[in-house]
Image (cartoon, rainbow, N blue to C red):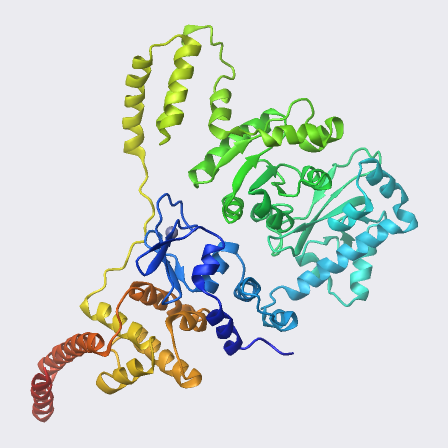
Length: 581
Ligand SMILES: [Zn+2]
C-alpha cells in the first residue's frame, strides 16, 4: 500500500506558514522579527510563546514547549503525527490521499479494535431482530430514536450467555483474546459472554476507538445490578476516558465550552436535544488523566453533575482541581430531578438551556456551598462563614472580584469593610507563603563545550555550506550525542540535498534519543544570526576544548605508563597537540 513520503510531508510543511497555522488557534502579535502569543501548553497569563516566521519554529520561554508546525498541531489538538500532517494540509488547502495517510498510521491494538467493532455490530444487529422488540420499545419510550441508536452504537446483548463467544470463535478469535479485551469471563473452564440480557453502549477512547461496553437492564429484572461495565483491560482504563469525548471535540470548538455530566445517559440525552459539546465522567470524581483531556480542549468547563449530595461535593472538588490547572470553571445545579437526563425529560430542553446560558462562576458556587449546614443568624456560624469566604478571596488575583465580594459581605451582614480588608490581609500573607512555584523547566547546566557544540549543530541545520564547514574544520565531537546528531544531519542532507531546522525536526520526531536535544538546539538557536564567521568562532572554541581534554587524558596515561618507549610516544603526541593549541 502506498504511504505518504517524507518529501511529501516536507512539501506540506513548506507550503504551510507556521504563523498562519498557530494564528488560526491563538491570536498573535508581531514583535520584531517574531510573533508572540499566550502559550496554550501551560497556564500562561502573559505571552510566553514566540513564533518565528523566518525559521518556521515556535517555542515557549516558560514551559519549554517547542517544535515546528506539525509539533504545534500535535500538541494543541492532541493528535498523532500523521493526523497533524492531515490537519495542516487541510488548513492550507492541500489535497492529500486519505488512504495513504491511513497506511502511514501505526496501528497498535489492531486486532483488539477489530473484535470490539465486530462486537458492536453484532449487538446493534440484535436490536433489529425478533429478540430486540422489547429493547427497542424500551429505547423508544426513553425518547431514543433510530438516529441516536446509530450515532451512539447502542445495541443488545442476547438472553443466552454465549452467543457473542460463539460468533467470535467462528471468526477465528481465540478465547484468550476475548478475555483480554473483557468480552467474556471464564468460570470452571467454561466461557461466558460478559454481557447478556442487556442494552449495550460502547465506550470509546479519546480517539473514538471502542475500548469497552456499558450495559443496562431493560426489563423488570430483580436481583441484578442496573449496569454492568467492562472491567479494566489493556484497552479500557476507566479513569482515562471521558464518555463522548471524540464526538464532543468538534462541537466544543464552536460552543467554546464543554459540559461535564456524570452518566453517559445524560450525555446522550443532551446530544439528542442538540447540545453536543458534552462529555460524561462515568462516575463523580475527575481523574488526573480526565483533567488533561479537558485541558486539551482549551475551552471553559461547565460542571453539571447530579442533583444529590455526592454530585454537589464532587462539583466542589472537581471544580477546585480544574481551577488549579488553570481552567475556567462554571457550574450548573439543576433542581427537582436527579440528573440532567431526567431533568430534560421532565422539563424540556429549553429549561435546561436557561440554566446553560446562565451558569454560575465556580467562585459563586463555592461561596454558596460554604453556607451549607450553617445558621448565619448565629454569631459563631456567621464568623466562620465570613472567614471561609475571605480565605477563598485571598486566593484570587482578581481585584474586582475581591472588591465585589467584600462589599457584598459588608452589606449582607452589616460588617465594616475596613475590618474585612484587614482580615483579608492576614489570609493573603498565608496564601503568598503557600504559593507554589510554577514548574519551569529545569535546564541542565551546559558547559562551554556543550553550548558551543549545540550552536555548531544549529548552524549545520541551516544549509550545506555549514555542513561543509563542520566537516572541513572539525569533523567530530567528543561526546556521543552531538556526534550522533551531526551524523544524522549529514545523512539527512545527503539524501535531501537541502536542510532547514523545521524539516529536520520532523525527521527526528521518531528518534527518541536525539529528538529532545535537537528540539532544544533549534529552539535556543531560533533567533541567532547565521554566518560562517560566527560558526568558526564556535568551531574554534570546541576544537580548543577537545584538544585540552585530549592532553589531559594523555597526561593521565603517561602517569600510569611503565614502558619507557610508550612514554616517549605519549609525550610526542602531547607536544604535537600543544602546538595546535
Ligand atoms: Zn508554555
